[in-house]
Length: 73
Ligand code: SF4
Image (cartoon, rainbow, N blue to C red; front, top):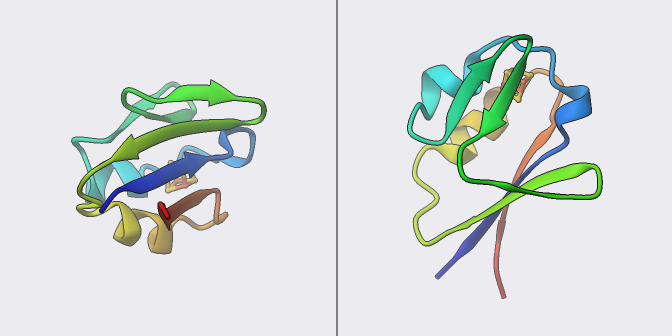
């Protein structure tokens, strides 16, 4: 199984919740969080992983809802 994690970084308010919950995938850089190892696709930063880990918890905790975790078909 694989998962696609996306972040609409323009909406990020830099609260740090994602970096606290899933520190291997999220780091704060200035006033934005970055998805480690992601690639930019238009307005989204995207990363595909085999194990979702804590990223769904990070998505649930994000106050602006800019993180999505989708199962890849
Ligand atoms: S939880 Fe959401 S708003 Fe907060 S730093 Fe992470 S991506 Fe940005």
